[in-house]
Length: 280
Ligand code: SAM
Image (cartoon, protein in one colour):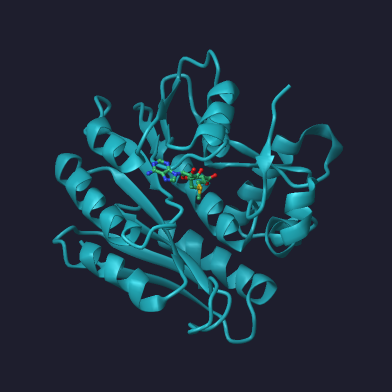
């Protein structure tokens, strides 16, 4: 019997964007027969309970994945995403558990592909390890994901998707993340790097993104949903993905998804952005 981590934030609007686009990137990678590696620097516990008291208390998934559960006119990225969450929830068609990024990827991985997961913290790491016990395609590493990333690239396959999804609990995380990506990109310039970021204080987020933007790295795409305008109050007002080397049509898929989500998950002063910050 698998145990699930408490889902305080699982399935919220930030997860909808992150996981729906992750799925599309993987599907694009699979258009070629060649194997690839998926590297998750901050993998989490793998799966989250939505019907325990913690998820019920925050109720964040109610303003995220739950709002899409009954919809039947979803754009591609959201339709594939909801289908994946439904399959994960099994035959009862009720939203009771939410897959973390490793579980979304696990459902997509072909026999020739690999997954490398980093998780620093004890409880999450134990759950993740139990989840992928005996799975020879998956390596679960207990340790710092940014250091692990440098070790893991370039992968022997020379094709890879890297999700960098830190908790941003420490102020220095923002800058450390940017430096780690720049270093990893020097070793593996063709990798698809997907950085998830929150906007709590706009200048803090932009300082990180500016480091990437001014690094000389080409092909950098911003995909962002602000559920409300930037604010000096405490709390996350926006979440985004910053993708280096996004597969073809990622921008179009993202725009269609965000245009759909804006009125459903966003407030009146919210906005969405899909923008090439650095081109070819
Ligand atoms: N990627 C996951 C998903 O989409 O389901 C969610 C990850 S959650 C936002 C961030 C995770 O990073 C937490 O489980 C936390 O324990 C872990 N973490 C924090 N600092 C870390 C570090 N330096 N290296 C690896 N993992 C870390």
